[in-house]
Image (cartoon, rainbow, N blue to C red):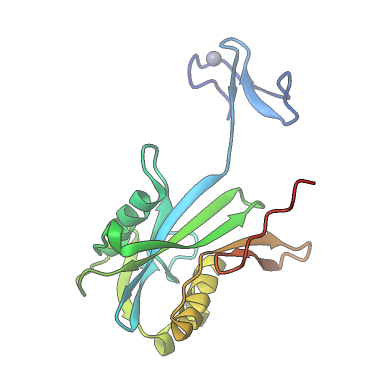
Length: 202
Ligand SMILES: [Zn+2]
């Protein structure tokens, strides 16, 4: 960021009074521009034994398979955004009443948070949107495990097929961090089937 989006003056990178982080500030407008993590919302669309995947038409990871997902827009709920992305990228219709929150990923190294919802496909009708090369249904044995675009997609699919055998689909939260060797480490932080015991206040 170089210029103020209000008055077009050059911005300065400094720690505002009372803050402890560097921010872009316009001294003319006395405005601080906060740069916070971005929310990415998507679905795992399910039809019977199969799940719907999209092959990416855009970078990064063009040509690899992913779940329909994209950036949450202002004015949307996370579920509304996930349903919209499913329609835009996969031409697939899912209803909010047929969706449930399933996996949440914190990616603090790249300032992103992912939300995936399990979603029942209304019908086997779908078509690639502008950001997809193709869209297809896969059974567990057909999943292109070596051609998945993102770790969040692989982890979500792995848990889905394991959960299906148990007929139990807990909501899980994961942290994804890069080790110093650039290896991606996935840590399960919480699962909704776990018991929660508040610490006593004594
Ligand atoms: Zn300004």
